[in-house]
Length: 266
Length: 266
DNA sequence: ACAGCTTCTCAACAATTCATCAACTGTGGG
DNA sequence: CCCACAGTTGATGAATTGTTGAGAAGCTGT
Image: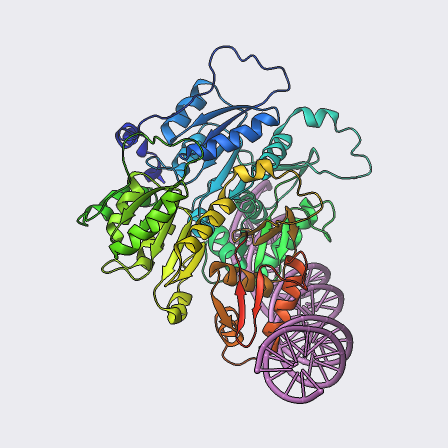
């Protein structure tokens, strides 16, 4: 684990060869109204940044751009946005490093853009802790939808106005606090056992990615021997604690013939 | 962590060992207007490069050339083009290796030129992930058409102007996300069974290549015994989920007397 | 160290979904 | 017009997942 940090010092060396081709977030006092959110788009491809920014701005967001990892970190330090859209495969300081660095002292929402379709395996090993995940090529509308979704999930105001959850109608709010190892559903704390917590944490840290039972045994149980039925069974009990209707899972989905997948909230 | 990132950093090393025998993409600041796209043509035959370049330039593209694999990789690293036209049978570092190397950290669109018509079998084993595929001899116009087609598919801007998809009239956008095993048609998620997903993924990974039912049984079902009617039947149900009009397939085409072929989008 | 508790594991069974294949129908090419 | 091949449909069985319970293993507090 110690081996994850030292890259910090090398940052400048790595970056030196990359010209900063970046528009940073507008500085000065934030002129936005109370409802306006700022998004930072990090991608080395300028066209991608432009298209994405255009779409997000059209939806009323304030958008900043960064062309590489260091620029992104600097931008975030200077004026933290409400959400970051981060391409994983950046040249130089990779997107994964940026994310890891970020996660060391912040819970800033991040949506990850993955270049290759089969990149799953590389992503899996690292507990990256992204809030959502998108494979290129994607449509700007889809990204915008995800942005809205993540922000909605993260928005504290939402809790205040969610009085009418009476009938158990629709949305369920689910929060995972890794620090206190507490999981909250609809404002109520649910008691999870150690394994249950590890499982839900792992899955939620890799939203939308499908894992086989064997993979879950490997990453959550950290054992190569072990009965796959155990995974099934834990999923079962987890659903009873976390899903509004365990018979019709909305978060912890079964992918028949493959395994399970975590679906981030609406 | 040092071991996780290096893919990006090693790029130069990989490229460095190869003598540059190549006209590389023009360097310096890109002088193109916003609409201009750059294509890299990789072929060991200079005449082919010339003819293809001539045609593409006539259509308004900026074209770079590379005569072998290493040169191609270097060129791409130095100034990534918008699309690569890649001959599979390069001397030395083969085209397949180039493609594989490329795919390790990028989703750059690639059109593959295959020398022999019967090369299918060699291609099939490796999931090369090309975006389109052309058999020599081909007409330059045909290649140009394919280039335009692939770029159109990949271009995010396309989405901005496609407001009038209302009536489900013409173009259907189809996306396959291997990570979440989700297939999206026209923005709607369609539920596929495991086999259906495997089948469509395999076919789409080898655009335009015709496969017999036996080949599909071998590669998708991974069995040598098995009734070919099963393939037919799965194609049938797949069409109903994926094709706008299953009676007149636009993607999953029947090649009478042979088998099936996947046609990449318009 | 031990008792009492919780949690994990695994096997057995039930329920569901899906793949398969065969028989039939439709269609296009010669 | 005929024949071969592809499309369509439905019944059946196999495979996968959900569910439950009982025993094993691990903790905690005394």
